Length: 386
Image 1 (tube, rainbow, N blue to C red):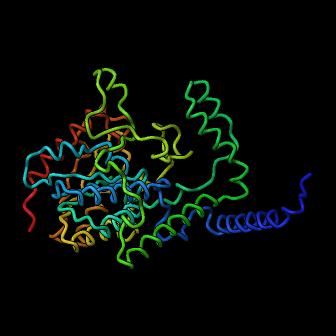
Image 2 (image 1 turned 90 degrees about the vertical axis):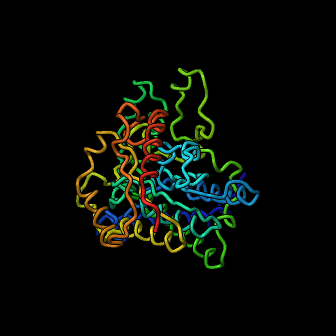
């Protein structure tokens, strides 16, 4: 027989932690209505583990370049839509001397501009010195999110049963997990926000500590053996089957382990949690996301790196849902911070047809081809850097 009294200390510690978390959560909800106004930048919306994915790709690129090869480097940095909208191989084959001959695609699922700032610090603090940095964003990334990490789902079996009746097994699994979290949400309404924010702070502290020591991404993350290949968020299996061929060289499907999507996505192609993009009140030139965009551009320019902003393709429904305040905010931020020296903005939002998307922001293969062709044409038309 086991002597359960041996676990008394562990049980007391677990209860103490639970009580503390519940107290903090209830106090925050009581004082703030559940909205994290105590977070200066709002919620981080980047999926867990994406810093490591990006860090490994940076380390892998450093290792590959040290072994020799094309050193005229361009980098495109952004959220997951970057990986789905831009084909590095097509950029590399442009044959235009104004476009770098080697491209590294760095994308992080769900990242807003505040999250991308941390990844830009990782990139710019490494040994990589690209000639051109493209920041692939949506205007909605400027929005402050106060609800993305809120644990407000209740115990409702309806969505789970509906998904099962429709034969959507993955959706049913995710909805079931959300449903089972209902009682836990009532007791610990801020647990996800507290946990995620704590991890973000720890990662940022580690990154900046290594930077102070003169060490970059290659000292933190093991190198990706194939950093140049784009791992697609959505595999174009239907198109590949129709064509009788696999994805073009330089692309492959991402695994669930690489995605680390968690239960905050209702199926891979379902709706994500509200990030606040549709609320005009969430856009501010003084907001953390706006300041992060300015900081990334200044960091890059301080290292002699040419920078441009690429507004990624969006389906018509997405463009219609984004308030005018988003673009107004972007224009004002760049004007106030840089004046006539603002980086060029390449607008690809309407560059492809709605039927070339998997959803509203992730293009299919044909969409990637057309969006990249439009990007190449825009880069060719840019004036030479001063």
